[in-house]
Image (cartoon, rainbow, N blue to C red; front, side, top):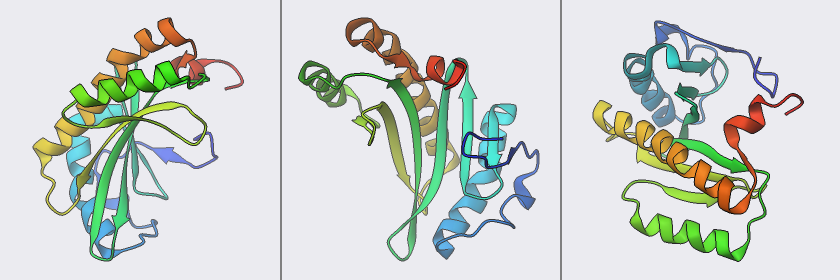
Amino acid sequence: MHAAGQAIFQCPSRQCCCRSMDFESSAQKTCYERIAPWMDELFGEATVAFEDEPLFIITIGSAVASTRVVPWGDNEALITTRSYVVTDIDATSELTYYLLRANDNILFGRFALDSEDDIVFEHSLVGSTCDRIELKHSVTTVVRLADDYDDEIVARWGGKRALDRWASPGA
């Protein structure tokens, strides 16, 4: 079970996975149905799909990312991959400046603070034009950059690597 109580499963053939989902638009459904087999082909057993929403969890090494398909306007969808980098951290002006400067040197994606001031790294693709190669690079870039930066941020500003927080009892 997922922390929110949602059942998740691994589906070797994603053809059946979207039948019980409620999609907000036809573009979202079309995009999800197109990328689901790619996620399985690209990441195999590292991919977990949610039964009730267009969401995949990908674990590569010690990093975890979520790839979600969301509606964008009336006729489009976005594919957004996000990885938590550091949690339980004080977002000081020095830290936020560091993240902004890092964003300036990153070609794909961005660092951000979520509503709880956890540091995330994410990248979005336009669903209708995304191809398999773009999806692979988007997901792997998010995971790689989150993994590359987490140790340095924790060493300099504290907090917990996201993976360490979720691995802790009671997290």
